[in-house]
Image 1 (spheres, rainbow, N blue to C red):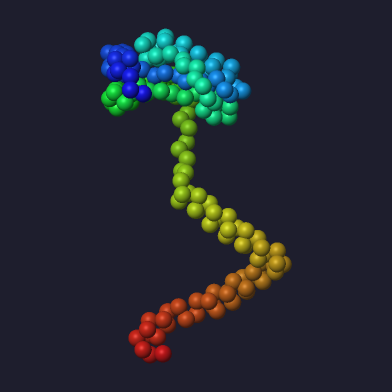
Image 2: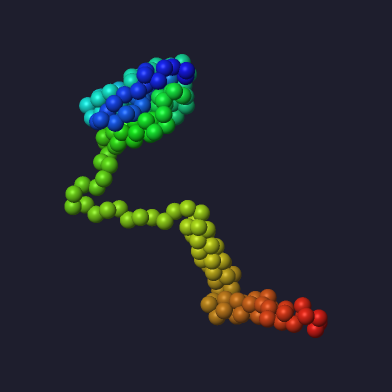
Length: 176
């Protein structure tokens, strides 16, 4: 990097920001699609955020841009620019992406908000346990042939496995 701070410093909407360079690799089979997307992003930002985009740099390499038609690499400032200015610049840039990909950033007036979905490891664990219980119940039913037989097997299992559960404290005290 080692370029002067001034090459990337800019003022957009009265805020000190760091300019963004859109990098497209020349050595990938999807260069035309990637370049088209970069040009679209630049045009949108030139209109909405004048002075934010430093330019489009065609670099040697592919940067894994052959994996997707809209894959670009972003260079946000240099080591001489402040982190805060870079964050302000990239926030402005991020707000232009929905328009570039043809989606709205928020629901249109009168449309309901999308319901919040719970995701993450605890949700995955819950779904996994529920699936195991349902699969186990289905297996028991199919292998025994009736609900009465399933109940009998479960009763025998719990009686055999948990019969001495409450007696453990007495054995630990030396009564065994």
